Amino acid sequence: MAMTDDNRDDALWALALAPPLAVRLYEDAPEAAVQRVVLAAVALAIAYAWAALFARRAGRPLGPGLPAFALGFVVLLPGPVAWGGAVLALSFGAVLGREVFGGRAILPPALIGLAFAIFSFPAGGFETQGTLALPLDPLFAASCLPGALVLALRRRLAWPVAIGAVLGAGAAALLLGDPAWWEHPVLGAAAAGVLFLAAAPEGAARGVAARLLHGVLVGALIVVIRLNNPDQPDGVVFAALLGGLFAPLLDRALSWRPRHG
Image 1 (cartoon, rainbow, N blue to C red):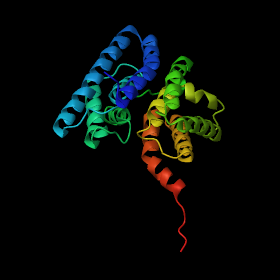
Image 2 (image 1 turned 90 degrees about the horizontal axis):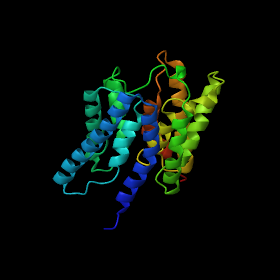
Image 3 (image 1 turned 180 degrees about the vertical axis):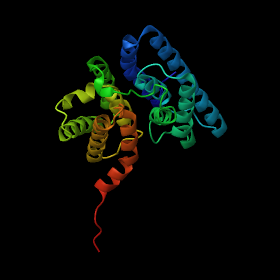
Image 4 (image 1 turned 60 degrees about the vertical axis):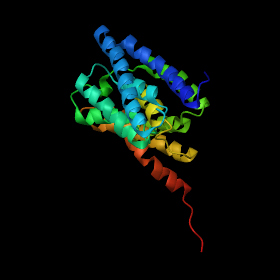
């Protein structure tokens, strides 16, 4: 049986997310690693269950993006989380981030689910606090690059967003007096958040210039949140969410032309 384009996309995203997931498991404590594996299975089950329910009622195929949603959610988690909050967040991301739009997301469902979890369960372990006190994690950042490169070559990832995010993070750090500007892309979940959430095609701007500005906005916001909040949250999810919401405005602004009577 031949693979459809949707099947190929799902396979590409699953392969792209496998290395960072493996690094997460390697760096986790044993109990945390077990929970992450079980949660990955639960996330896939929830994603496919909601997709099957809505697809059956609407008489349409399941649609693409389910592995990217489930695995992306699990990869972005810093460690063990509350099970109830995770299940609710996954369901919220599935329904409000994907299924109500006919199975085609306008923002990455993993981003919607993570944002819901962070805002609804601030003590649930869904976001790192004290990010600047953490050691750098170049292994995790490097593990995100091979899959992101393959996705970009297959035009399944908006590479200008990633470049813009590095530039934006560096500029914001220097403007705010942080000499270690180069550390932010390899700190916390910045690499995975930028590559697999902000640069995901569902929420990225359309034009190349708009995508660069989109990335600059995301990278700058990550640094601003980290440096100006006393709790020093990672800021990746909020920055990616805000960048995605502004993406249509950036497209419109850069494509605007004055009318001549």
